[in-house]
Length: 254
Image (cartoon, rainbow, N blue to C red; front, side, top):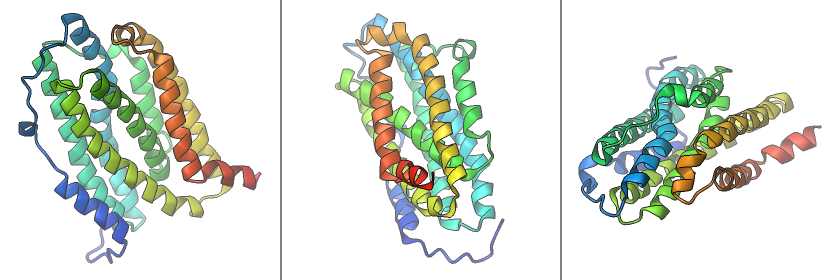
């Protein structure tokens, strides 16, 4: 797993790593006092809707720590290097959301109210395969992007909007990593392995449909709907699937 002097020749991963370093930021760069204009009802709705993202940031930290050894075992030091910086991003997001709950003076939903989130993250690591996890984490990043984008649009001049917009910059880097890693690995996979990625996509969306039903009331407070959210997320995911050439390659293999 550990090489004394790995070659480090993949410049694209190394550039992403450098961007990750230069893109680091802290909670002191956010104005936490800007909560005027968020009604008590909307604060409670936010507390519920942030919960799946809050859990997602925590489980992403766990996922990075689980997948890093798998990638190092394959001898790919450059993507492992980037994942280490991604772990810090996830930790920062978790810390910021933890603080946001205190600022808004609301609480997240208890875990028993969102059993789908545990099923979702268990499914990501079910195969103990780094390619499956990276593809799943791409969908998860798009999930977070849709949520953060919705928060930024609905609360533009508040701490919620500012924090969301800053976090979206990190999510964009994570998507770039997934793009690079999957483009590197997909040509090495057989047709069955590629089909399994689409099965993973469908499994995750079935879980998210149930999650949307649980969050419907809170979403409606913000004039949002699970259907609108999932349509946006599905369209975004399908653009990535086509960009990666996954659908065409699988269909051609049949």
